[in-house]
Image 1 (cartoon, chains in turn brown, red, cyan):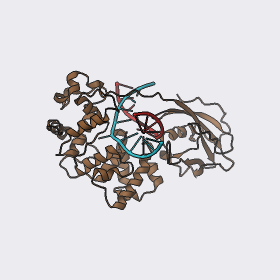
Image 2 (cartoon, protein in one colour):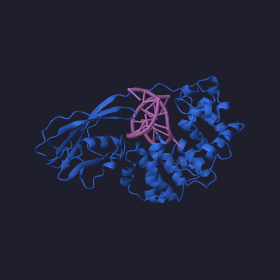
Image 3 (spheres, protein in one colour):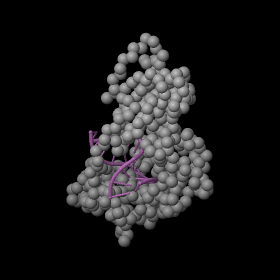
Length: 357
DNA sequence: AATTCGGGGCC
DNA sequence: GGCCCAGAATT
């Protein structure tokens, strides 16, 4: 059963006046979106804020203007350019998807065809289908979940309410301008129907909002309680040899999979030792918070005189700290040779350093 | 249905 | 310090 259309009509009218200007977005009525740019932005935006994505999107489209360019890129370079954005399985899937699409010749133009590609799930397949191909697919992201939960005053907590939300969202989706409509819902959620204090006073849908009439908008959607994050501990070893530094590429599977890193201990039960025999000294502790646990990582350093058991030596001239994920950048910040803490200084006393707060 | 995946910005 | 973010893949 499809909605009468009042809500989508009101929303599209609002979007025509207040749409956000974004690097991957084509203004309404100004031509058709490039599926490659839509796809790239959607993957980058998975669980990631618009502000964080912007610079990465500009960089990627500059380096690789088409899906064929990206398909031809080296895995290591893509991983290096993705470094810092998080959820690195996205980067590995990005390359795999680009190569599959390049082999096909172009992006599939249906939700089902897109859904079969690596890294493209229920949300992203619907979003690309709607935005790039103007198909009336039901696009449900975190913004839509919030907007719909409030419009219909859905009290069932997430994620149990997902099917119900999808049904309401499906009924709202218009046959005309579904791509603009999908982006309008997300703009509304991002700028007006916000999580904590929604701006109902200027919302174009306030007259249709059941939660607003009940005065409970700010309390929806309800969510299941979250588990507490455990604190794990580990060590990372930043070894130097002449003008080289010891690094490794982490296994594709698991945390920080496929990223450039310094050799580290396990921090989930496994117990790897130092990557080389050396006199290691402690530089401090870095704390890093992941999605499901926090980590205190002791940063060790040494000058290496023997061949390392694992990892590889790369010259400091070629070493690119920007290719490191966030956690390893913190370790680098402690271990990095600086004028204040030179590597080879006989004058430097071996005073213990205080862990950063 | 629950867990595993990052990182930053904002209250 | 917790919450949220244009979620997907795996179990």
